[in-house]
Amino acid sequence: MPKRIPVWLDCDPGHDDAVAILMALQLPDIDLKGISCVFGNASLDNTVTNAARCLVAFGSPEQAQRTPIYAGVAKPLIRLVRHDDEIHGEDGLGGVEGLPARDDPAVVAKLDETRGKSAVLAMADAARSLPDGEQLALVATGAMTNVALFVSMFPDLVRDKVAQVVVMGGAEGRGNRSPTAEFNILIDPHAASILFDAEVPVVMAPLNVTHTALFRPHDNHSLLVPPSALPSLPETTPDATASPSKAHTPLRHTLSTLLTFFAKTYADVFAFDEGPPVHDALCIAYLARPDLFKGKRYRVDVELQGEHTTGTTVVDLWEYKKDELVEWKKDPDSRASWGRFGKNVFVLEELDVPEFWKLFQQTVDAADKVSPLNAQK
Ligand SMILES: [Ca+2]
Image 1: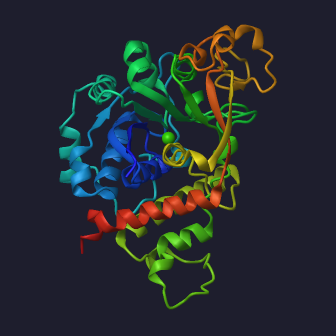
Image 2: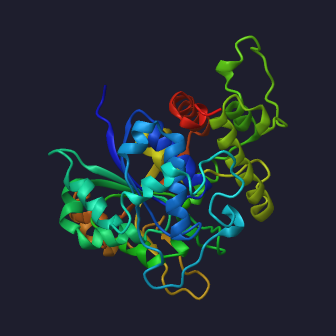
Image 3: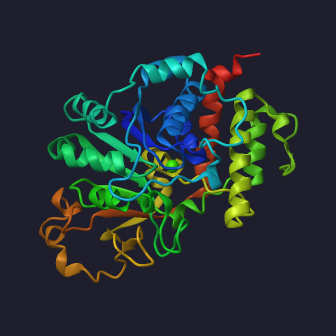
């Protein structure tokens, strides 16, 4: 069996973060070392609680026990804090049924383990404790504040022990929380700028790609009742009206209610009628299956002072800035070539969407076998 990839997930659950947690726990190629949380879709108190709720529901009891969860930063470096109740509901996971509540003993115990400890120092410990020759992949699916602090405080450690940082955020020429800015960047553009200019490979899953990964009615149908549970009905037509009450297992019911709420807010706010994009999950899919994606390395800067465009990711498609890229020209394989004077971001531009959803369904199959939700009656 090939070596598993050590991964640290920094997130703000959030419906699509919840899918990322599920996939990080259940993809066999991913070795999830820890989770840290940041403000974003909801307040830090809610995001860290939601991460614990997802961990104890989507992993095996053994995984839940060994995976630590840390609360990170509650506000941006400079700007005023904002959350996104409109899309994710007041507590960040609106509409979900069957997840353990915030006062569930397993959730409380999980959060008690690390209360008062630093998420940024925990990331550093996770990187430092890897054996020689192994490097951590960091995933950031919320504001990039925790990760910006980490790369600022530990540049040497990042150079030695962090292989790459995969972020959901930004876009080529569009926005979702301003005409040109994507939410994760917009809520802390300074943090994103610090990360993008650090000497570490950064991979960006922008809206252009995440908006192709829509959870469509037929995906919900396969989620509720997996094809493997229907051996006698080979030619079933996907039933777009299938309701969560038809779910094959309690876990599937929970995931379907999660994504159905998300579908509704995406339809109401953004007129996404085919289904909601599961943005953050793409970062985990990229680590496990980079072959499902196409992309290209560019110079990307974050607009910090625009009158209309703060938080925009300025992707230099036509190399207007090539004269500034002295480190890239010197050696495109060097760490420095990923920093301030290089092509600093590998931008994902295409996804094999059917294969992505197969991967998602595989993780649901795997979770079905171990989730404590399915043991309850
Ligand atoms: Ca997120």
